[in-house]
Image 1: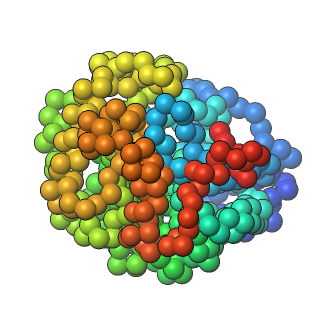
Image 2: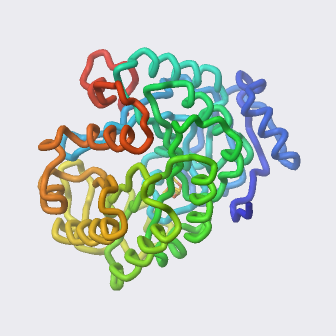
Length: 387
Ligand code: SF4
């Protein structure tokens, strides 16, 4: 499938993972690339002067691969578990939060695959009563490197063997070819971030065009995968209603709601450091000014009435095509939930419960699980780390 994202020219491999199946796959799929061996990961800091976009680092990750979602006590968290397999992304979204989170300027992926897979299996099977929703798209795009590194060929079959877990691959790419023949067992959700057409064309430089994202979603559907969509970050600008309404209409003209597990909504929010990083690259970025207010978690969000207006509009548009679909707000307060949905997650068992129920209802996975992974976050010591 066509892509605007070129493969890498230089691949730097840490000595201890040079025999990794990931490195073997990279050598096969990047025949033109130069491969170098490193004794350890170098220490470069973000710099606008050097271009790292065609360099890839494969290192041994020494921490825990499974992490709890970085919830705060101020906002309702979804109780997600992150499978950390790499960092950074070359899709190049202007608003990308990773610019503020990460200080290395290159993509790095973790070559100690066997340790990663064994940790995943060990932790998830240790808690058979807990339903885990696991995602790989927190610190990079889940499928960005898939044509070359092939992580999905390891992750998807593994999750098919774990009765109490589902995997979500979250992407803005069209790199789904590898998924076609994988034995997913109905345990994998392929998911796309969507936005207003002008945002997708102007602010997401190397992402697949909207039509292609939908076409890929349709193909995944044919291969038996479940789907989810994320309207995040939603922007407030003149004409937003028309643009978002068009995307919702085209989404439901292409994809039947019964295979969509959930749809999230999240208005644009940022840490103050992110705004600085964005303006360094693009001093006239038009979304930097607006009615933003400081929030208890240190981020800036649109003024609450604007957020509620965005959410209500999108919720109504979505529900006009799919009245029963699970829609949720990402990192929002109970009072915003109440104004949008008429209830706060706490009144119906919590957001993790809402999403677990959506998984059970749509995917029929975790039918006998009594607890959400969020319940483990409260235990000491935690079975996996929190960031
Ligand atoms: S696809 Fe996601 S991770 Fe990649 S640049 Fe865009 S927002 Fe960042």
